[in-house]
Length: 288
Image (tube, rainbow, N blue to C red):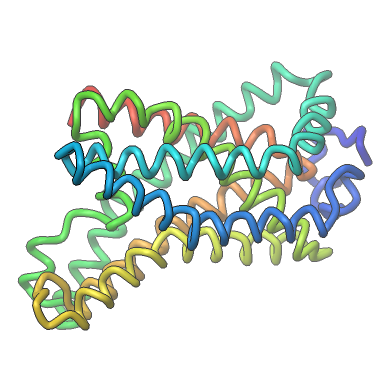
């Protein structure tokens, strides 16, 4: 199946991830998921503590210490993941070689659709849902009037708020993190589940992709609610994060569809993810 015709979408959907790549086994996937969990739960905490100590000693701004932590965590993640994934990425590049220009064009067009749908949801559908929740008193007026976007997005915006850190973060947010997330959420997740019907791979990986992007935020909010000295958070904020979940879930679904119809070739989704993150980063740098 290594010579899968990229544009034979109907036939590609009949295959499974295991049939398209001899270089990437389920064990590879388990290793990558373990890396992701250890990096997210342990390594990020270690680097966060180191960055905090450096910041206190040198009297650095919070945004600079956060940038140090993010850079070290991201570099560690990609350095641990690439040795296990580079063969499958090279294999996908070889599979793309004969149709490379068409695949690039397809990826750019798919990104246009992806970005349009995401923008529509973010600017209209999401706001309508939050307004509806406010009208039926699930979200208070105070929370409704003060909400901006997800805590995940606010954290990214903070990293781009400093004139120095924004240039440091651009290659990480725009290139390194998209490659890393595609390896984890498309290549590894699809290979682990390996359902014969592609729709199940797409739905499960999309749901996990969405959940991961709000889990840290919900934990922060819960900690804030429990802390009696902190009155910044309420259950309303958890409800908002679940609304924001659908934005990430939708992104995961769209990337999953592209991955499946391309015969589980990761190159198009990497291109789409890089274009999306890079465009958003450029908007943050020059227009916000």
